[in-house]
Length: 579
Image (tube, rainbow, N blue to C red; front, side):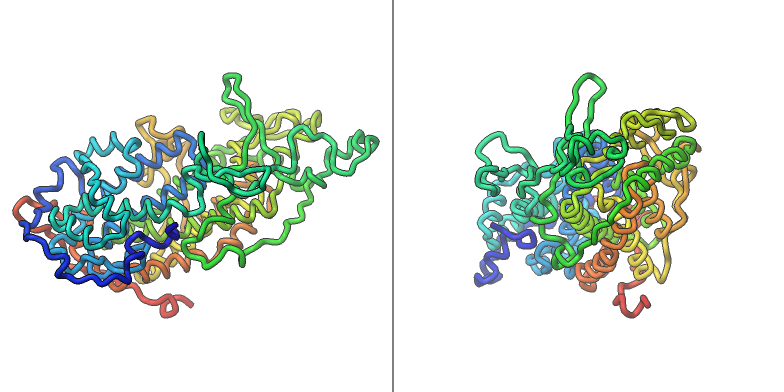
């Protein structure tokens, strides 16, 4: 099997490859101005449409956060490898090597418009069913799969691949297919069990091949919740002790572990959660870190009754605060947070090019990838109970807190057994907060990136609403729109404030106990710097060549793409710019 960082071609790197073998009949160069669809927007707008449409679809259908992170990572492999295959210096994100065909490809093909056609083709091959409406709306028709190219790629036959690409005059859509084939090979055995090829066998206590009815992303480590629903007695209790009122406030034995929460669809269907992807922190190779094993957190040693009362009090305050409600909803979706950051990085710097955007997205996705793996590994190691379970065990106790109706302004008296947080509690254990981990990685990377790439500049303030960032306004693409009116608007001053607001929102909403947030911030600190190291590695000194920036004219059929001279920053080493 291929490793996550190896492509099919690496298997044949030891074979003698001579350019004489690659010689093919000369074919007239394609004209990107003629090839680029008339209705297709500029490269930045195309990518924005693709990413927003895919993100909206993932949110609407309830895809769980770790799975979204994996799909986002795959999409950025498309993005940056399409750039690297149309550049002299940039490195392939999988092989960390330059384009093997760069000396054969005409240099006029190294432009943003060709890269965009390549990206659209690659995205279409992975997410075609989802993206079909938006691809049709921009006038892009994916090229049918070239099975000859697929066969050559599967065999690792670089000479064959070269011949087919050259015969097609290096059509960027065919290059996009090659990029997709490489990605598929790299992620096939990446530890996520995305196709459900493995299933946990309880008898042999190991993951075995699935033979039928396979479940994508199924557990491969045999995780089983120790705190079974309905187990009213605590481990080691006598009947006498279990009957005492005070025992319902005690959390010990198996009751301290995560318990699958009950859910319903409002139409009579009830279910219990299964822990999502419990295996990824133990089976998946990180993108940036050498290993996950060196980053661990000590037990938080909760005083559960004190912490539970703090949860109730925070939700009491939230019940009367529209501002807190909006922020909890917004930061509940990592995709919203990333989209906000990407929007303001894109809009804040006039010299920020399409290629810069592809580089930024890949690096922040790598940071996100490692953050989710770290958080998930610790979630399984500690396996701690959610506030919902602890508070509901108080049964008939009356508490004054959020009532469950977001339209009610203010707290109400309810029975503890009926307690629920402000938003759905995701199906995974409590400690540490994955959202706080993600936002720490986002904020740290973004601050380093903009300071290093834009002469010490930072991003902010970031306005959600007003003349700033908006989501889902005027259509039903998202369950809850943001920034469409004053009631759903707010401002984030900078990346430090974003990290803090993101973490605190998890406490305001009642999903976590207090130590879960600072612990997550500690766990994921430093990932942002590693992500910026990846930027400098993959750029490898390139100036992107024929890079598109907002305002550049479209290519005209019969004329080469027009680009402005590069007047901008250059990446330097972190040690020379940061204390």
